[in-house]
Structures are given as structure tokens and as C-alpha cells.
Length: 348
Image (cartoon, rainbow, N blue to C red):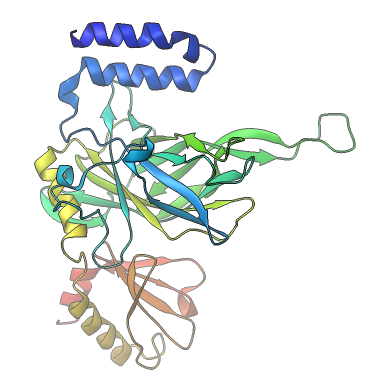
């Protein structure tokens, strides 16, 4: 059976299931685009799921088990040794991979999905994401992880939110469900920082997908070729303590071999020169004691190689940039500059 006939058969057998759900229609059109245009899979098929469960009263996100029917990208596909999962070498953060499809009017994908096995969650509980961090970027022409170019963003669409409803004519009105979106850029996270991923089924399972769209901040489907990465945590209404952070890395137009280099820059080696970072921290403590009083010990937190001080200020390195928060820097994370440039200016 050729590819075209396989697609036709798939649609014929599935139409009765998808015709009442626009999201299912979109998913099957996407599958058809894959099947009829196989060359688009320049970096292999990177579709996978994030497994969600509750362990000891806290949400846990993990690599799923294909034996239970979910999708998982093999380490070998990513150029990693057999059995070595894509985990950031410096911070221990798990990395889930995906791959944008370039359509005529948009660059988007609905992977990774979120999945729970029957019995892993509480029926009716609402699973939510919490977005944080900055949009990271790996440029094949200057192969290192840094911040995404200015004016480029990833829009996460399809998440839901609940809003008060005053129009039902009753004393107590059921909140309205509205669709929202989250924007990831080099400047951080904007619009809705937390939305509902989906509701757990009656058997305690979950299977849902959101839409990831790579675009300019004007909504145009144009972005540099490279790898992009965002950060999430997961919570539920019943278990509000957030999961550990997870990263999602997207391939945009790289060949498989080049995308493997982007993965290796995180998994097989540290993305931050910690020795140089410690020297720069020490230099800042000596030259700017009012900002960074008393020498501190470096540690790893939320993806940063960082130090915190008695005045409440913290400074950290991530994606070849220096960030600061607290003390005289204020409550919002600010970017101080390029790590290598600042180190060179300090004479290090």
C-alpha cells in the first residue's frame, strides 16, 4: 500500500471519530501532511509524550514508558548512547524533544503531548502548566545555547482558563471556560503564565495535546533555523505543589545530525563554563560589594548556575547570559548581559 492510499484509508476509518471535534480534525490533517510529505522529517520523527502522575502528593513529570502505549524518542535518534535519556548535564533537567512543521502560513506542532496511565491521576482533576524562564536558542552558525533573537517567540496555544461568569442569571454562576495562550521570548514569559492542559478522565488517565507555534512577535511564520527550548512545570488543582522543571527542545529546520549537536551541547557537556562563572562572580563581589555583599557559594537552581547574597540579590548564568533578581535589582529577573562579553570586560 502506498503512502497516499494509507492516508486515504486512515481518514476513511477515522472520520466518524473526528468529525465532531475540530482539534481531532486538525491532528489528522497534520498526520496526513507528514505522510504525504515525508521529506519534511529532516530530523526524524520526534513526536513524544510527557508522562504525568501524582507521586507522594506532588505532580511528577517523566519520560513515558512505550510499553504502556505512549510515544518516546529513542536516545539513539538524538545521537545519545543507548539508555541515556536527554537530561541536561549541568542541572539534571529532563529535556523532551519535538520538531516544528513548516506550513505555508505557520510553523507549528502539537507535540509533545501530555499523558497519564489509567489510575495515575484523580478523576476530574485539572492538570495545568506553569511557564517560566526565557526562550533559548541554538544557532548552527554559532553553535552555543543563548537567548532567542529579539522579536522571535513561541506561542503555546490551546490551554484553557476559567473566568467568572456574571451572565447566567443565577446567584451562583459556573465559571466560563476560555482558551488562552502563553508567549515565550528572550525577555521571559508573557500573556497567561499558567493554563489548563486538560481534565483527567474518569479512569484516572489523561491524553491531550496543545499547539506550539514559532513566529515573530507580529505573528509572521518566520524564525531563524535552529533549536529552541522552553521551560514548564506542572500542577493540578488538587496537587498545587509544582513538579520539577522540564525543558522542551524544538527542532526548526535542522538536519538530524545538526540537531543532535544541539542536544549534545546540553546533555553530553555542560552548557556553562562554571569555572569562568565562579571567577566572574568573585570579580563582581570584589568590585561591586554593595550589590553582591559577602562572598557566596555557587549552586544550581531552576536551570541557573547561581549565587545568592545576604541582601536578597541573586545572580546566575544561563544560556550564555547573566541574570539577576532581588536586592537592588528588584523583584523581576533582569538580564545583565552576555556572559562571555562581561567576562572579557572583567579581564577574565
